[in-house]
Image: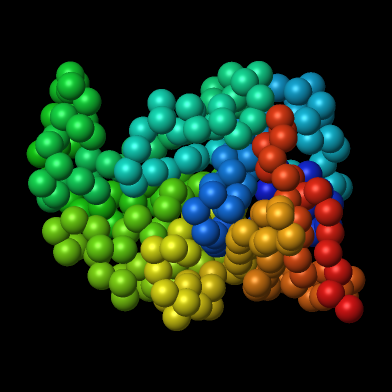
Length: 278
């Protein structure tokens, strides 16, 4: 295995199977432009390949010879829980995919660590009824970055991890996380994942940061897929640009492919057309 599929069939076919093993890929975009749907599709399809091969073949097709699905899929959120993410998955793809895929996704909810220093009432993010385990987490004053690092150390090696979202850390409660910490975190992840193997997909909301800050994240990552809205006449279209992707971008440039139009259907987000810059 030298590629891990993104789970977006047409994109994987263009990239020779998916992302090189050991990559940190930023999936950045304006709100609603497709970045989040891309992350949902990646997690669900890679999980589906393990739990229901027949359905995976129906919605995705054959894997490239150079690609193999990871042993585990992890979806890590700083602000919400598995039930919320499952509901969002159902807005993106068919219920039968979600019903099967959720059994193959490990959800990690770091909202207790994220919100613990904020004025937000504890029952809002811990739930009205808390278990003994929840109460133990509430009393743990370790910061969100510590909890995040421990989770990745325990679970990232050789696996797919979706991080939702790096930009949630900007201005995290209590002033614990500064921008410099976020930029350094992405650089550190790139170094760690190179030795761990696997694939990390990090969501980035471009509405929440400046162009300069986005540039710092792009520079520290292995690759960046940027989603945005384009207007043409009376229609708006979601587009995806491959801004940077070490080990992959040269292949795209040799084919004059830099921008993709996307669509969302029962199988999640996919490429509907390829625009070539001549």
